[in-house]
Image (cartoon, rainbow, N blue to C red; front, side, top):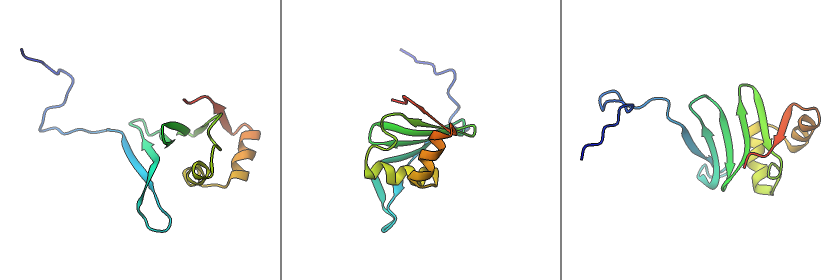
Length: 106
């Protein structure tokens, strides 16, 4: 039986525009932090995932935060702050001012 993959690139072409997943790195050691991920999608969107939960998504200049887990724990908050490049007080103000959109991402 022969399987044909019509939309796959030829071996010589290589793959482009593949999503990239990286662990956040420790501030102290520079080592990867388990279960804390920055995902860059093909369309340029960035996603912060903590364990199995999507915490935040940045796409086309808009930031979405998960309604229930954006401020779930100290660890989630630490890496959310890094992802958004701001402190929790600023994030709360942006939610209040409708700069960030709260929604169910999971």
